[in-house]
View (cartoon, one colour):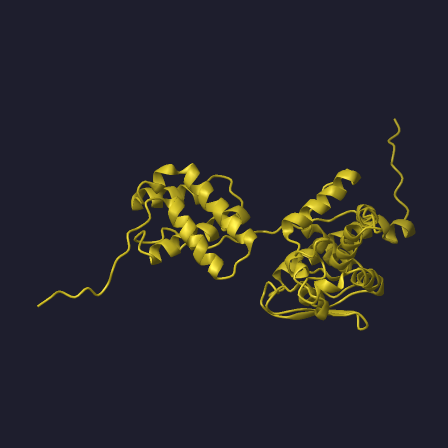
Length: 316
């Protein structure tokens, strides 16, 4: 009786470079962005450059030890740890599924909880930043509109970059963050001020008709979508002129802090920022509570009502 061939086992790639290229083709078919493709390539290549012994020739023991050393590096910040874990573990999962390695050595590793970075910008610096763009150009007008929008809504940069003209209701001063573009995968409606609406309307008025509905509101002058890198470069450009340092996410922090200082409600802020729980929002509340404590120390009426005691001088 002739033997039956039920399964053909494909030979594993001869190197991690070939495996990575096959992995990226698979990820591209899933529709991930070009930037995410670059991030995967950068993280995986960095790991194997640092631990070349892990790639020759898919040695399970060496791979495991190297992965543990990489994540256990002294002084590594939670955000860096989480990035390394996500990109490498996803790649190793794919390799294990394709039987290139026996198991993902990082399978049961969990993300670390990051404390988060809250920046309290000086209001004068924010005003100077808002006045920096040359609004006689499309790029400058877009930059000012985007800055105002961040400071007026607290929206995440990635969520803002995905907004389309149909998401805006200029008359109602509302914008919808769609479920598919929201970080938490839950849609929410944000409100903004007439001043912001005016600049956004100006931006809409200069858009070429051929861009159509598919081109995001906040895009390049070529009609291409912005990303965190291109927007970060723009903010850095203005900061060099001002002699200061600001990153795009700082505008979201500034919205939250100023909103609370103006008497805004913490629960309302949670919904605007799209926080799943109140825990992150409480950090802004704690920061503004410190502001109140300092103000009370400086301006308490008791200092005026009760004169300070005169220093007693002992006479000989």
